[in-house]
Image: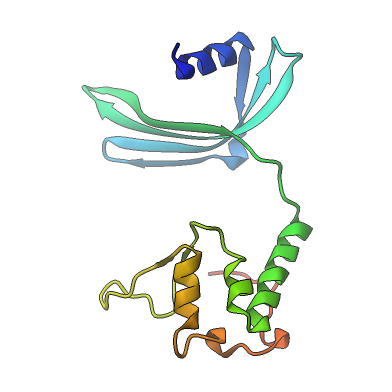
Length: 165
C-alpha cells in the first residue's frame, strides 16, 4: 500500500473545492519559469463543508512549449499567533539578551535557527551561525557578549510604525 496515494485518495474523497486568497498571493516570473505562492482555502464538501486554510507554492517551467508544474508544496496553516503573543516573544528575547545569561539567550532560538552575526562576510569567510550550540559558542567568544554592548533592558527598544524606504 502506497501511503502517498492513500493520503491523496482520502483528500479527494472529501470533494475539496479550492479558493485562492488573492491578497495573500505572490507571483514571480522569469524566462522559462514562474512561481505562485500564497494561501488558499479548501471547502471539504463531503466532510460537512469543513473549511481548511493552507499555504501553497507552485513552480512552473516551460517544457516542450507547455507550462508544467516542476515543484509543488501545500500544507495546512497552523493556528495563527496573535500580535500580542508576538510582542511577548520579542520581550522574552529582550529579557534574555539583557540578562547576561547566554544559555537563556540561546534557548530563545529554534534548534535549527540561522543567525547572521554582525561580522558576517562571505568575502572574509565568516559563516552564518546555525543551531543553538553555534549561537552560544559565538556569543561566548571574546567581544561578542553582552551583545552589541547591551547591558540593560533599557538599552533595547522595539519601535512601532517605522516607515521603511
